[in-house]
Length: 315
Image (cartoon, rainbow, N blue to C red; front, top):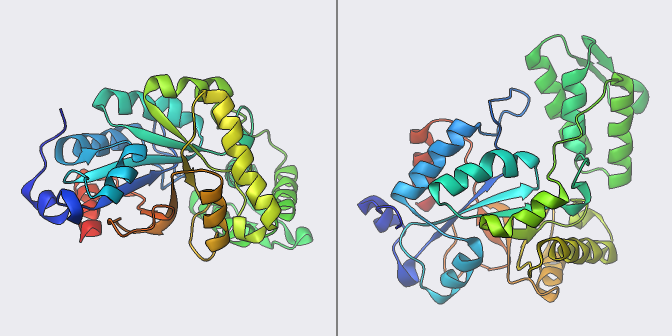
């Protein structure tokens, strides 16, 4: 049985043709809070989110909600939970809580990192975390000199380096991160991403699987042929693991017009996907583009802040 929809939620997100769909976008759920990953909720915070969703909204699988949205048949207070990238804590920490509260979810997975892979931004974060020096001079690779004497200064260094590297060509970005890791000289974790066996177990656990390319490129920064291959091959491999059709796609990084454009929307449609999500902030209505559904990132640590963000987004 779904939760009790509050009168305010029913007013802001009614059922039927005037319905609205709110899609939540998570990346990681940590066992305990980590100052080096400040936007990721810990398990207790995430469970508080799930409690609110179950008690006050109407959680749905995205695969079902997308069709109901187009048909004008969504229930009041419709909401979907999604995860991007394929982190192992999605399986080990978030999934048991999703099952406990009976909240469905979709995991969008970049298949090139499964097993002991590591996304470039995580390599950077973990290198700066592990550095034993109070200063990191990267001038020889054109990135400047960074103060690492405090936790705050390390977080500043991470933020600045991610902003600098994010839109470089992929090969150059990976090379720079490898050079930073080499200068730090410390071993980095190799257990951040889900294993293929964990992905295989997701359908039986009630999780929908969505494609998120192979290597998580900025699609607008790579040739069209390569972008199409990333979109299609990521899906093909997921289907071989899961043994079922993968119907949903998430654009890497996901900012419309900057990270992807109309070319990539056509690629996703032509590849046979049934819906896709972006990182555009907002709520979805019946007239929304089913291949560019908006999402919000629930960063608030308090239950009140989380619920307030949901309601403000409906408005």
